[in-house]
Length: 352
Image (cartoon, rainbow, N blue to C red; front, side, top):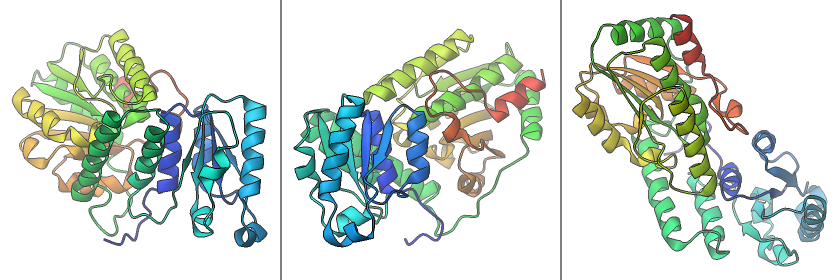
């Protein structure tokens, strides 16, 4: 399928994966404006993102000497533990030899040959993980696991997510105060409910707040709380899961951990079975709600929370009665180490 709406970039995906691997300094080998917004966001998360700032003359004559200069300067200025050189469209088109450039530094450094021309952004993730495996940063077992998870996440997006149509109109979803009022009405009625977080990586810092807010606004309600907070995967992912779980437990939320933060795309059947087995009349699902196939939620009044405006229509197609968007969630969860209050959580708490 050729998409008419924008899709995530494989270059950006490589940057985020480098961060998850504990890279201190990432160098984009290309023009200074390449992936500008996400580079700035990642700096909020503690990873320095530099650029070789290739200009027109280097598009013709090559920029490997410039890359060598930036690598040496980064090593001398920041004393990083790990570095990564991330390719761009320009670097790949003119045939830059990234591997040759990284051999000149003593800091453990990987070179990721990637560009934005791939149809799926997971190519950037896989390329980074393969380079990390080649450097001994992860083992082959974890590499295989990540490949399986990425394939599953891609399939979910293709079937029920932002890649399910050539063009999806972005929407802001339902009014949060109306959905919150209905959710609290159900929770306070005594009917059985279930609250599920199936979050992607650091987005859990805000999606978890939705569960905490329901628990605070309807104390004693017969609600089962589930979240994908098992500690598996790359080091940052494990640490994020631990912090979020401890944050929920500290607020008295009796949360059950099912699945890990990097398994969001592969948990649909498992989480759906839990929803069905619970006998819940209503379900609050935050994070990647579309991972759960429709057959598991038919007959259940679903309140879904996403951070994707283009995910609203697909969620309604799945029969979700209430669909809300957490605007600016991703920027607000970068660089944090504790649960961040969500808009929907704020509205729920205001109704106590």
